Length: 460
Image 1: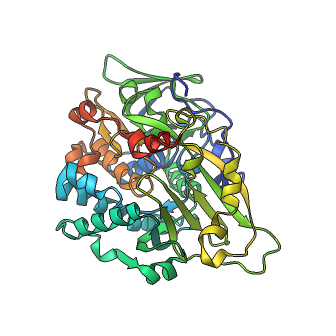
Image 2: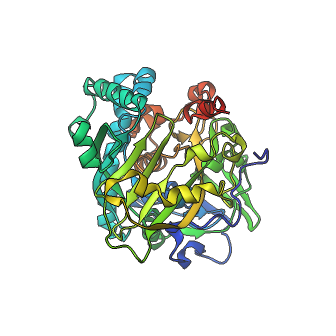
Image 3: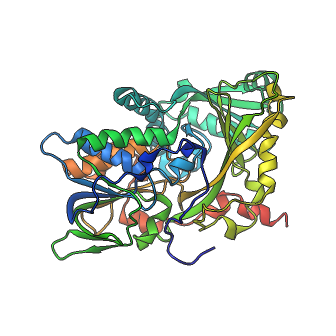
């Protein structure tokens, strides 16, 4: 575990999502940095691209001057290294959210995530983004007594919530029905609901191309090292390529936020994870296909996730038992240039055959294995809004490994605050996402407990 500031490292492991060697990732709109801009966005991942998209989409009165600075290449952070899911989570943390925020507050979170399915589908169709988007069903299988019990209790509580808009979309399957529908013979209970999967880098690229056509200045390999507040209330953004004065700043920096915003040092924590791309070997007699995306739940803290791509290949992430007990290997660790221990590859190579009935007898290999850095929030929810006592400096970060069904409309809220001058309370954002001074002071760190770290210490 490093005690230095959490800036992105160079030469990250190769993600499948960047396997096509697209030169767009190196985009620099101009040879030199401008000396000033109206809005400066730090980060060219999903949050940064979505913020720029909504600024250009919603601004009807005057041309926007927007500059985006990216430390590495386009979508090289968590979004370009994730599992490809567009999947709400209606129930896994529902009981906790209801306890903390009440029925209305808990429902706000699920309803907001549900809206992302249609919101992302609509923008993909509107901009004709070629990103392999498929709308399907998510199937969460539950393998232990604790996982089954937790699911049943959460769904029962959710059904009693008059504010929830997602109940009609949830189906609970038990016994043989669960095993047959899921193709997962070990599962006594499965829960399905509408979800999607996509090629995340291509989605971000599509948003950015729209913005570039509108005038966005995108500068990759330009790491923001410091941000100073000037006497006139504007900001001076410092990089090795030069400094830029900006009237407004958006930090779309996720795990790396505290490197340039130290007030989030104990609020958004870098957490290292791993993912893989599995393909068939040439000598397979048949190619099975799973219609659903999957979450494989052993307990609250331990689960795998996967999607079946249209070409038959599989994206699988998880594998916590291989690294969780070694805290320094993942907690507050930004080194996505290295892999975890070598045993993970072999575990992924037989993962499908050992878990899914339709995959018995198939031969597969892992052709991509990578790591990525997630921006874990100490209270499991993102930080969205204007930073207290720093006027016109906004943040959109800390998505806790669950950004795909939360980022896009959170970015819309940021755009409305900047363009319309409205408060975050007027944007339709869940109240629990809102950045407030009180939340900054009171949010306590439960990451080690909720990831299951202490459970693995008892096994040593």
